[in-house]
Each structure stands twice: as structure tokens, then as C-alpha cells.
Image (cartoon, rainbow over all chains, first blue to last red):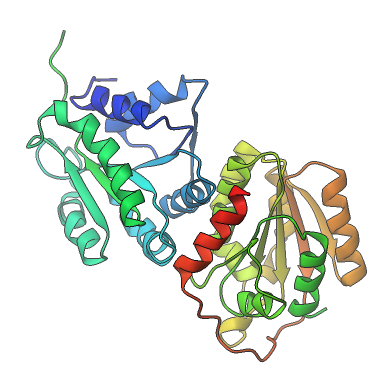
Length: 173
Length: 184
């Protein structure tokens, strides 16, 4: 499993949020983050079958005021959008979704670029709050952005999505 | 047994438990039985009642969580079967009100009659109980208190809806009231 630039910062951010639950739909670039939390006894990290199901589970956990984050790949927003808008947004559920980015520099899958590149526009068009962590964001800012995104979800009483680009491999130590 | 009959039995048996009610005529009839802080009335998001209930069950393992879903919504949300099988929350009770049709949208048939819904949930590790009439439903609800779940109650109801107005309360108000109930 290659080490990814940004994984350590995502891990630090989720730890600072004190997450207790981490439902996830896997993504190869998130493997390091998922492996970290699957090995943490204090965190219940578990796979969900589809993204909208993950949004529902996250909504239930969040309504009950438990600390939870859903991780998924951005290609799954096609599945998740109705749940995010007609439940998360309409019912003012302050939940945090961290989605790994596909498409763009470093992508190896020929099927995803057209959709992935339009994901931020799709989310904005649906009125969802989106923050990006990518090569334009210095790595020391990532942890604080994750924590701030959760705070913003609570302030705005809405779901917040962080799009994290973990495609860059870390240089060999 | 009508849907209204079944909902009345469920509410009477679970007065202190959080209840997630699926969209359409089901929440209209639930609300007609008296709007409760303990009910999460879902105005849309068909198929999502089960996953929301699963999240609630994980969040508060000390108490039961009741999900009221239809046969159409259950089929739409079948992806939860794998997660249910993996996590097996003992405090989750899923009542599937099966009338074989999408009653809220005009009575179009569902595929529920073509497969064994209870067997699907049994294969995912749920205890199941059939309920063809109010007496059987009362007995099934009592059984959910006697043995750990997850439970799937296969409740047969007649097609059709009670003639009721749309339930249009602000979803944010519904969620705030429900979250406050959970925090008590």
C-alpha cells in the first residue's frame, strides 16, 4: 500500500474530532486512513454497501450526537445525492462526509474523469457545502480544515463535504 | 389489517422507543395517530429509513430503535442487508409493512410478492416474525422485547391509504424535536 501525501493529516484531523464511528465505502487512495482507524479499538470503522446507505447511517449517528464521519469516493455522489439533499440538508443534519477525489492529475482510471471533474459543480448545484483539500492547500492546513468543516456543519446546521485528493504518493523515506 | 391498524399497534407497544417512519402515506397515518417527539417522520428519501435506524441503533445500544418501512422501501434499501449482517445490532426492530404495492403513489405493484422478504433478513442474521393480524403483531412486538435482535417483523397489511392530508411540517423542526428526544 503506497503512502499518500495527506493521509497523516486526514488521520490527525479525524482523531482531533474524536470520531467514534467511521462507516466507509472504500477507495484505494483512502486505504492508509481506513487501515489506521480499523486498527483503533476506540473507533468502530465498518464498510457500508452503498454511499446513500452510508449517508443514512451517518445521519442516524449524528442525530444521536455521536461523533461520526463517512468516508467514500467522489464517484459515489451519484448514489448519495438524494440522501444528502432530501434528508441531510432538509432535516438540517450537521454531518461530515470526507470524499476522496478521483479524476484530475494522477488519475489512472479512464472511466471516471468526466464525472469526477464535475463533482464539485454537481455538489454546489445541489446547494451542498464543499471544501477542498488538494495540492493547492498546504498540508499543514488539512487537519484544521477537517476540524473546521465539522464545526461549520454544526454552525450551518447542514451536511458538509470535504473533498480530499490523496492521489499523490509520499516520497520514499 | 390496515396500515393504520398496524401503526397503532406498533406505537402502543413502543411508547418510549425512537421510531423512524418511512415516507408517503405511512408518516401521514403515523402523524394522524398523534405527532410524537419520538418519531422521525421522513417526508422523502425512500429506502433510507433502515440505514438511519441502523445508525441510531449503533449510537444508542442501551435502547431499542424501531424502523417502520414498506415493502417497496425495503426493496429500495436492500443494500443495508450486508451491513446488518455484519454489525447485527441487537436493539434494532424493523417492521416491514407489506401490502405488495406502492400504495402512496397509486398502487403500482412492487416485486415483494416475487421473493421471500423475511428469508432475506433471516439470511442476514435477523430474527423474523410474521404478523398477519393485530394479535400476531402484538405477539411479535412482545417477542422483540424477550429476545435480542436484530428483528424483522413481516407485517401483512391491506393495500390502500387512510384519506389524510399531506404531512408538511418543517423537516428541520421534526429533526430537532427528535434529536432532543434522543438526548433525554
